[in-house]
Amino acid sequence: MKGKKVLVGVTGGIAAYKAPELVRLLVKADFQVEVAMTESATWFVTPLTLETLSGNKVIARMFGGDETPMDHIRCGQDADLIIIAPATANIIGKMAHGIGDDFLSTCMLAATATTLICPAMNDRMFLNPAVQDNLNLLQERGFHVMAPGSGELACGTEGPGRLPDPADIFEQAQILLSERDLADLKILVTAGPTTEHIDPVRFISNRSSGKMGYALARAALRRGAEVVLVSGPTNMKPPPGIHFCPVQTAEEMKRKVFEHRSGCHVIIKAAAVSDYRPKEMARQKVKKGADSVSLHMVKNPDILALLGQTKKDHPCILVGFAAETENLLNNAQKKITAKNLDMIVANDVSRKDAGFQTDTNAVKIIYADGRVEDSPLMGKIDVAHLILDRARALKDKSF
Ligand code: PMT
Image (cartoon, rainbow, N blue to C red; front, side, top):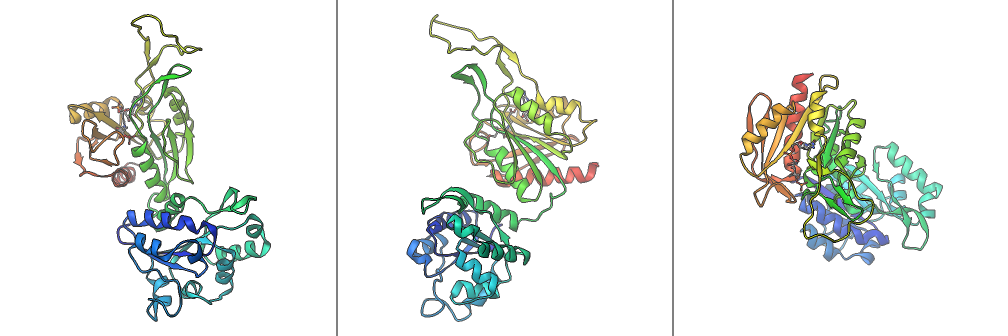
């Protein structure tokens, strides 16, 4: 996505306060961002804020500002994507009916880029048949419309009309800009830790944040795959459009994985599953007593090994992860054979910049035929794309 051009059109609604966050996310992901605002939008958020965040001059007027004479033609044709967020009933009406009476609406008349419209307004206004007809018309003409969220609105009423979270708009932008080379695949990803309960208030778990697994799910979704994400408890928000299955224990994770494995072309087990669990969970909080206590632990099912054992009946590309603190290559290679995998992604979790909780990872991808590929240190989303590239290639070779 590096260098792709996005034009963000901001119109005059209270949700304009979320536009700076959207611009920040786009810039952070290396998009080149230009902002065009309507005059009313400048009452809600200042051009200076958006200029500072985007690193580019904001165009808010047709005449008399810093714009050049052809900006209203250039902006919408240069861009790879236009996002109108928030989109008021007014801009939606103008776009549907070909009205150009300010910079943004005139620019939209000449625009050729893929466009994402994010309506945000009072619920009655949103449900007004004229607005709905206009949105339908725009969708028929190929514009993408993101459904607003429902809930309490700035005007005090409840209903549909909230601008989606900037992170969700950003995700939708990524989907629209990505090559959909995984559109024919169903991919199941596991993420996060499992928690194994000792009593109602205590559990055994590990340091997995879910970042690696969620990055895989997000990357697969962007590239058009149908994605099932089975996740242990994390602080991460699953992206909209994913079939999300939250679980806590290894047993629950096993049930969900097996419930959804049918028809999967690729299964990637990035979760850090507890190998053992307390034999029994105490019904009440265990009281402090003796100076030392021991906990009787029993083995959890090895979900990945079970998937590997039954792969003949459910052919798929099976990808494991290995979190190792020593003998990375040897230990990971043993797992590939023991669990009947097509490839394993080994991360050295003793590093500070890789493995658990970090935003970056450096991995060794080991294949069943013995090949080993080293990745440089990269953001987890880039590592995710690399793993998906390799899984795609294995799938194309195998069946
Ligand atoms: O979540 P993050 O903070 O981003 O960190 C990412 C990560 C380090 C958790 C991840 O990249 C990773 O390495 N996950 C696997 C961790 C792990 O449990 O490794 P393992 O070597 O114990 O297990 C090997 C494989 O078997 C894994 O794919 C695991 O999901 C699977 N397994 C293990 C035990 C078990 N009972 N069932 C399993 O399916």
